[in-house]
Every structure is written in structure tokens, then in C-alpha cells.
Length: 223
Image (cartoon, rainbow, N blue to C red; front, side, top):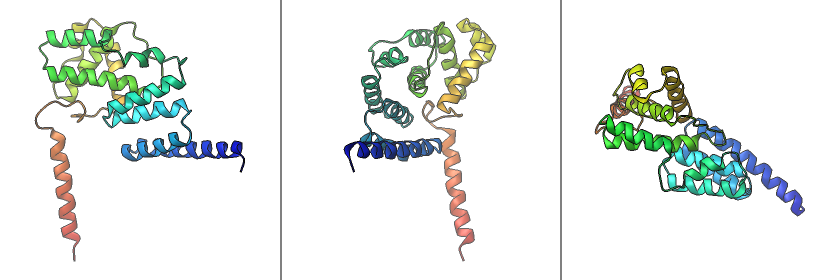
């Protein structure tokens, strides 16, 4: 096999692994997805999209250090990307406009510091999760309001939508739209472990109940 043929074969194998990784990721088997995608990158390290997708998967796994390294590789391969400015902001030491406004408003509302931290974490993960999609922020208040609202709902601190919209100076429709975008892109669920700050997560009881039911069913079916 010639070098050219070998290269084509590697790229095809890498593409197959990439597709398998995405399928695993969609099943929420994140560890398997990461392993498969790292295999694809080993075969074809020059594909910028592979590195971006790996960054998204690592962020979902909570491994932000490795996620940022994957983003750095993406920027190295795609320096002219339309999202390069947004990605570079993730490496900045200071807060962006959304984080500054979010921190100011949640602090003035006397929200706990750990919930403010969860909202900022959500914003970081969201900017990674949208990958190569563009993100326009004509009004930082809109995104900060949505982050505040979403984190409150995760932590079972519901607040009327119109009240929070008024507090941030945005429309109810805009707040609702941005909230749904966060939920969709991050697969946010009630009491989501990534953003829940309480001592006892209600989901723990569901896990315990499922484990108990599995044991009871096993005992029941035992001859």
C-alpha cells in the first residue's frame, strides 16, 4: 500500500471512529465516546472538527482542563474560524460581559455564591457545547438572566419568569428563548448534578430506589 493509500485508509477509519463516538455520546456513554474520538484523532490529528467535538465531550464529562487543550488544538488547526474570538475568550483570565453582569445581579439578589459559581460554569460549558455555531451577544443581560433563571430552576428555587425578566431588564420572550437554548444545548434536567448546589440532591433517592427495585426483582425471579 502506498503512503497516499495508507493516509486515505487512516482518514476513513478515523471518520468511522468519529461517527461511532458521536453515537455513543448521544446515548450519554461519554467515556466510550471520548475513547473512540481520541482514537480517531490519533489516526487523523489534522482534523479540527475532531478536536472541537472532543472539547465538547470532555466538557460534558466535567474535564475542563483537557477540554481547553482540545480547544487550543482546534484553534491551532482552524485559526481563521468564525468562532475563534469566542473560543479565545475562554482562555482569558477575566470575566466576559455576561459573567460580569450575571455576578452583579445575582449578588444583588443575595443568591448564594455557589449558585453564582454554577451559573458561570453553565455559561462556560454552553460556549463549548455550541461548538462551531456562532453566538451573538447584543445584550449581555439576556444571557445572564437566562443563566440565573436556569440555575434557580435546577436548584428548585423557582421564580416567576416575568419577575426575573423585569429584574434584568429583558423581555419575557427573550428570557424564555435563551433559557430553552441552554436547556437544549446542555441537556439540563431538574436537579442536574452539574449545577445543583444543595447538600442532598433529590435524584440520589431516585438512584437508590432504582437500585433497590433491581435487587428486589432479582430476588423475586430467583428460583
